[in-house]
Amino acid sequence: MNTNRFLIPVWIIALSLTVLTIVAIVQTATGLPGARANSVPAIDMPLGEIAKNSLPNLPLTGIDFPNQFHDFGIIPDNKKGYAAFTFSNTGKEPLLILGAEGSCGCTVPTWPKEPIAPGKLGKIEVAFDPAGKLGEHSKVVSITSNTQPTTTILTIKATIIKSE
Image (tube, rainbow, N blue to C red; front, side, top):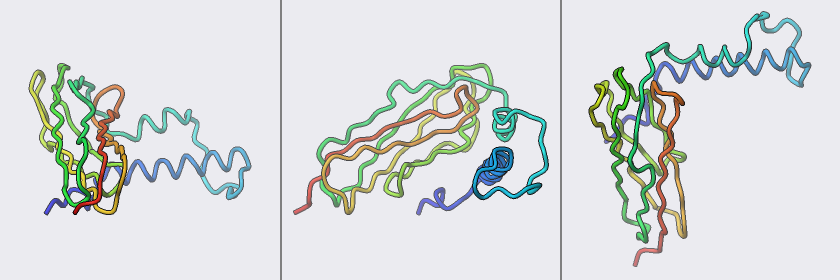
């Protein structure tokens, strides 16, 4: 059983807390509903810098996916689909996949947890469960890594028919 989807990496928790802090700062500064006077200490830093500084301070590298799209075609609603997306580290620093998240619970990615050396290949596998769905569906997987931009989007598509 894949337990990756049940683990919450520390950086996600830190990022969530940072976002909540930013929202509170903006609400307080602008007087938006939900703001409480003096509820958040003043921070003399642009909001973009706060968000940028909340991610781990890692050296940047490059990532290249020859294909960021997979079409399963027509599949029955009782047959899971699996796709593999190969990528390469095109930079000069080790590539770290910090996380991968499907757009819904039916789309579950697995990714390498070890650094990918410069010039080497890696693979992200995506499992798609069409149960309970019919018709055309498109799902995305958001990959977070030490690249610029930090997020890369992979897309899967399927036309799902009722199984017999």
